[in-house]
Length: 212
Image (cartoon, rainbow, N blue to C red; front, side, top):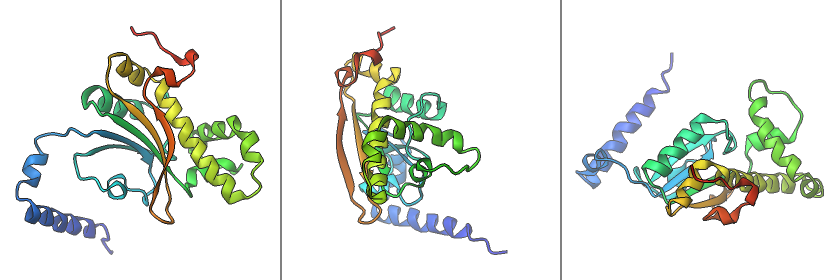
């Protein structure tokens, strides 16, 4: 039986040696702790590695990934990562990064059943429902899909701002910026959607939470 996974272990040894050759104290310093400035909420797609496409090194970017880079308020995994990043690591920027050609978003545009993941895709379908007038007016399917992917990112940034974790950070005077980006698989370039939240003033008053 071919053990294709073994190449990963060999690659790891090669990578570690290269790091040591470039900086003998690399791992010693890395083991002392982390103080990343960024939290990345991205898609699980294997073609979108956060550190590689942003040119960051280990220790510089804290990462959470799921299908279609969603911010679901009942997702304890996401909330735990967000809480640790904001309250303990004190990150200054939270980036939601989607990508054109996202399979989860494309699946959510249709009506096919996929199984358990249908429950997850429903949250993406909600985004389509919110913006169906704009999206249905786009006749070109590819362009409609690209716009849907952008709108999904925008909605997830909005959902981030609604969390008590983010709002309490703002009320405590913590510098915290929320951003929405989309990565293009075709050219490797990240598009800034110019979605930036820096305080509760950036969201509707109905979502404002009083501090406990």
